[in-house]
Length: 439
Ligand code: IMP
Image (cartoon, rainbow, N blue to C red; front, side):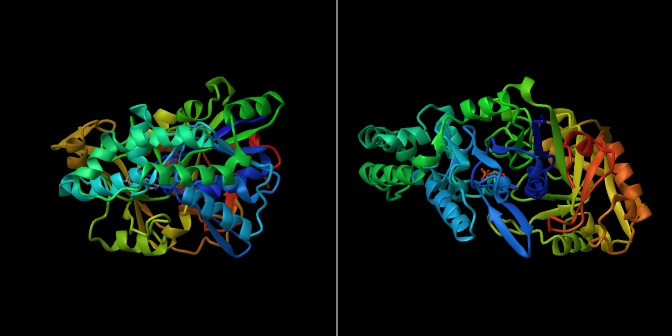
C-alpha cells in the first residue's frame, strides 16, 4: 500500500490541507511529523470551512486514523480547544486520534519567550514568527531540557522538572526582562490536568504506525510549513525551527525511509510568504501583487497577517524539488490567476549583475537576488467551475506545462477553488496510478 508524503514546496500556506483532505479518503492513516500551532490548515466542504492547527487534515474522514507525531510541538490549551471545536462539529475522535508521548510541550513560558525575543530583536533581525512558542520549544528540545507529553503523567516529577526550567536559562531570560511567570506548582497542575484529558489519545505513535504499515495499512504523511522554511534548507535564519522537508518525516514519526513510497510537492500557482526574509519574486507595492492577495485571500490562517505575494518562483521550486525529489506536484489556487492578462514565472536569478545558480545560503546574498522573468499569456476566464483536466483553458495548460519544466516534475493535481470538489486530478498521472480509486 502507498505511504506518501505531502509537503509544502514554497514558504508554507500552499494548500497542503486541501490536498491531504482529498487524498485521505484512500489512506488508513494521516500523520503529522513536525511543527505545531504555527500551522494553519484550512479544509472546506459541504459549505463549511474548518481551520486546523495541530490536528492533521484527515480528521474529516471518519474511518481515517490521525497521528500527531513525536516531531511536533504542542500547545495543549490550544490543542484541547481544537478538539472541543471538532467535537462540537460532530467529529468523533475516540479510538482514531493518536498523540505521541514523545511530542514536546509548548510551556506557556516558552510562548512568552517567543514574544519577548521577537519584540526585543532589532528591526532587521525580527523573524516575524507566529508567536506560538515554536522556536523556544524546539530550542529546549535540542538543549535537552524540554518537556514531552509523556512527562505530564507524574505530577510530582513534573513539578521538579518545571522548577528546573524556571530556574534555568528560559526563566532567567524572562525574569531579567521583568516578566511575571507562573509558578512551577501552577504549571505542573495545569499540565497534569491537560494530560488527564488527553491521556486516552497518548501513545507510542512510532510503534503504532510501524505495526499498521506491517499489517498493510497506508499512511499519508502531512507536512506543515514549507521547504523554504526548513531549518536546514530554508532561507536561514528566516525559517521555522523544524525539518519541513519530506526527509523529516522519518525522524518526526519513527518511520524508516525504506517504508516511504512517494512524495508529493504542493505549490501555489504563484508565490506567498509571511514573516520576514528573502522572497526574490515578491511584488512590492505592485497592482499585480495586490490583486493576487485579494483574489487569493492571502491573509494568514493562524495570525491573520497579510501575506507577501509574488510570481511563481521557478528557481526556488526547482530547489525544493531537488531536496524532496517529488514524484509529482499539486498546483493549488490556479483560479487566483484567472483575472490576469499576463502571468510571469521567475526562471532565473541574477546576483550583483551575474546569473546565479540555485538558492544562496547567505541571507544577505538572497536578499540581493534579482528575478529573471518570462511572461505567459493569461487565460483570462473563470476556471472555478472546471472539474476535468481537459476542460482547463489552453493557456492554463501551457502555464502548467511550463511549471512542470521549471520544477522538474509532473503536475498531477490542480486546485481551482477552496472546496473539496474544486480539485482536478490529471488522468494517468502519478497520483491516479499510485493512489487507487481516487475519484
Ligand atoms: P515560527 O514557526 O512561528 O517560529 O515562525 C518562523 C517563520 O515561519 C515565520 O516567518 C513565520 O511566518 C513562518 N511560518 C511558520 N508557520 C507557518 C505556516 O504555517 N505558514 C507560513 N509561514 C509559517
